[in-house]
Length: 412
Image (cartoon, rainbow, N blue to C red; front, side, top):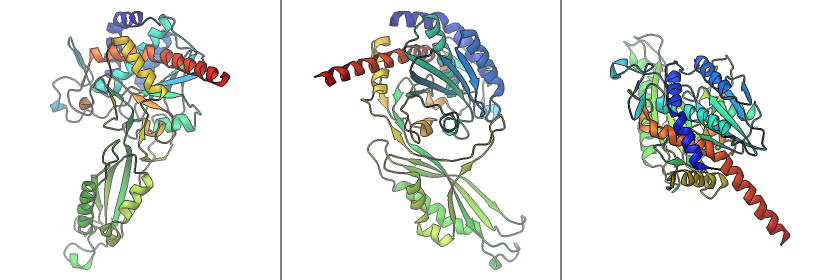
């Protein structure tokens, strides 16, 4: 494998790659509205010459290159959050902007930049005839922002696809990540009893009952333990809502939603039991449950999943980490930092639930996600594209070398 040829080819293709990125930024693709952008990406896949392209029933776009025995996947979600208050943007979030170093627009870092890089990595593989004993699966996934992991839970459990590893193209600030905390959305519903607002003493105000529970959750977060791998778990209240027969009545229920992050010593079951044992929750008579996410995808498919995903970590000595480090060093002549990810990705289902190794590396910066004037860096896109093109071959090379060593050891 000639690494200079890969870098030269990526540099020759970069202006076209940047144009493609701006084109997919311009196509609105909020959750449950990804169909149009996927049509444009599929068009690019066909022009590149992917060997097989299909959409599954959820609407995930799956493009295959090669016919080798090692199935390797790369994933980039095409959905974005909303742009929020347009007054906070200095340029149109869809028209975007471009200067010498950056490309701006909604989803440019999170994570259409990663999508563009992996699509053009496939182009480099095809044009340099780098196909080896692998099949590369390029996945453009949907609805990640609403429920990360759900799309890949469907791909694994319903499509029956199980790669040897998955590279996630989330923005990583130029470093690689080998793990992340687990993620849960938990609902706590506190009951009350309504009555007329002029006689509140006749009822039981669920909002007042919720006050001690809120304080207890705040204290619980302060006392989370550190696993010395991913750090401390966390819990925070993300939403509060209540019900009452009218605006002049006592609230008869109050619901708080929690965002819970799990380290390697914590499981979803442990997190639920931890809450149920709080005296304040027991005294309130609250119901504690994991949120069931059941919003249909843009195709109309319903695939309910509990939002309770465990943490995961990939050993740095694994074949995947080793191949990634080798690829990066041979391409750029420098070391790459590897550490756990700060946020959450589709890896919570791929590795967390289904134990398929993942590594996270992509163009852009995490601090650009979900904020006005989002942008990504051209240098990051070029580097990521080169890594994506070279990694599958290096991984196969390492697998073959390991097999030869095992054969020699068996003969001794």
